[in-house]
Amino acid sequence: MLCQGYKNLFLNPNRKAQMRLRLNQELRNKISSRWRIHAEQEHTDEKEKYFKSRESIKPEQDKAWNLTHEIVRRHYTESDVEKARYLQNKFDNVNTVASDSCFHLGYNGQAEDRDDNDKPIIVDKRISHHFDFKIDGGIHGEDNGRRDHDFAYAYFRDELKAQDECNPDINIEMAGKERNPHQTKFQDANSKYLGTNGGRDNQTSYSKEWNDDYKLDLIGREYCRDRQLDCSKQEYDTLMVWQIAKGKLIQCHTDWIKSVLTQMKFVKDVIKGYKYLDEAIEFAKESGFALNDAELIRTNSTGLIMYNPKNAAEMLKSMKNKTQTREQKIAERIAYQQAQTQSQSVN
Image 1 (tube, rainbow, N blue to C red):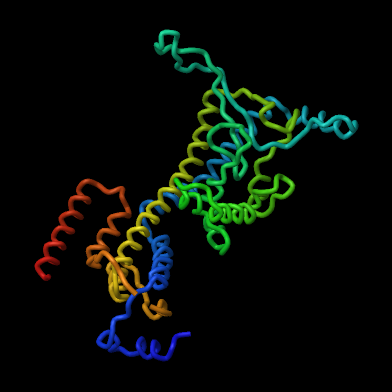
Image 2: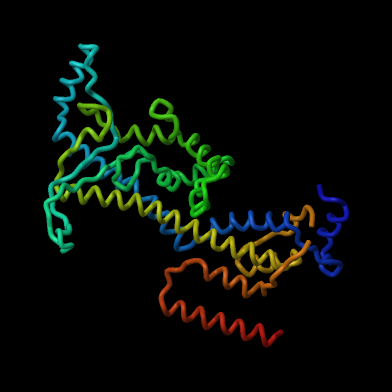
C-alpha cells in the first residue's frame, strides 16, 4: 500500500510545486511494461500487414488441402484404401492403412546446373517439396523430423498472449541470442497450451482441432517419405503459393514485433536518461500514450542521458509505419527540423 505521505502527495493538485518524484528502476520497469502494451495496441503498418496475413492463411491452406486431396486420391483411390482397410481388419499381420498430413509431391522438370567447366546448363531434374499441413509443420520443404513452431505462434498469438505463462513472441525476442532457460520455459509453455508436444497421442486443444482437418488415410507405411507422389507443375506452383503465404505470416509477425522491440529499446534508453517521473509522463503524452502517474507510484532515483520529451517522441514515431512515400519522409523531416529550430529558440 502507498504510505500516507505518498497519498497526500498525489492527491494534492499542487504536488508539482512541492516536489518532483524521482524515478527509480522499479518505476522505469513499470513504465516500460505499460508502454509495451501500448505499443502492441497501436495501429501501425506492420501490425496491419500481420493481421491481413493471418486472416488470409486459413483459406489459403484449405485451398491447398483440397488440391492435395485431389492429387493424393489419384494415386490412392477411396476404393483401394477401403480394400486395404478390409485386409487390415481381417488379418492381424497386415498394417498398411495410416493417416497422414504431410506429403512429398513433385514433377519431372528442368533446372539450371553447372557442367565440368562450371558453365551453366539446363538439366532434367525431379522438382519436389515436402508439404506439411500440421500446425507445426515446416515450410522449407525438408522432411527432417524437425517441427516449426513459429507458424503456430503467429497464427495463435492472441490465444497464447492471453496466458500468463506463455509468450508467442519469445523466438523473435531471443533471435540472435544463445538458447537459454528463459526461452525454453516459454517454448515449453506454448507447446503445452497449443498441444503440440507429446506426439500424436498427446495432442490437445488447438493442435488437435487444426490437425484433424488435414488428414488422409493412405496405403503404405506411416511416414510420408515413403511416398513420392506425382503432380503437375501447375498444381505444384499452386501449393507453393500456400507455402509462401505461411512464410509471409511468420515474417509479418516478426516484422511487427521487431518494430515494437525497436521502439521499446529506444523508450527504455530515453526513460533511463530521465531523473524525474514527470519527464517520463511528458514523453509518454507527446508520444500519444496516456500514462497515469498515480497507477505507477509505489517506490522511487537517478538517470543518464537527457532527452527533450517532444524530440524523443518524434524519434519514436519515426520508428513505426516505415512504408512511407518519399514525399511523406521529406515532409516529416522538414517538420522535425522546424520543431528543433523552435525548441532551440525557446531555450
